[in-house]
Image (tube, rainbow, N blue to C red; front, top):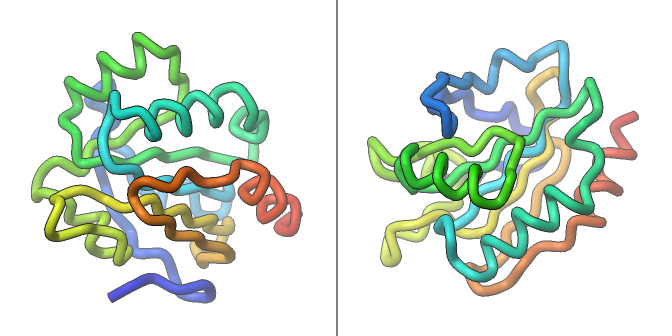
Length: 153
């Protein structure tokens, strides 16, 4: 079942590229969360999207915004990719149970075994305020994230 705008965001805990557990509910009352699901590390479109976030999304450095990027890759793969491309934001592994968090948000492609390109902006109270889901081959527009975040201020 897909998560829709106005829904309470399903809570989850996943490990980041350093093996540190990250729980969505830790940010309630403190930060707006940009939750970005993507298919696979090191793939062309995913790399260009993560580099665009790194280079063109200064909101990730704000004290009231947390970026969480989620894929079904293992933590080891995410660490190697983050180190290589200097991604200084949380890259979370939805490896096992395979794609469980992506499934809970309705953005898991069962046939391909990966997440689609789903993005959710979750406010400080834990409510989804904006979302976009693109097909796997179609990159997202970072400017849309910026506009949606600006509307929360």
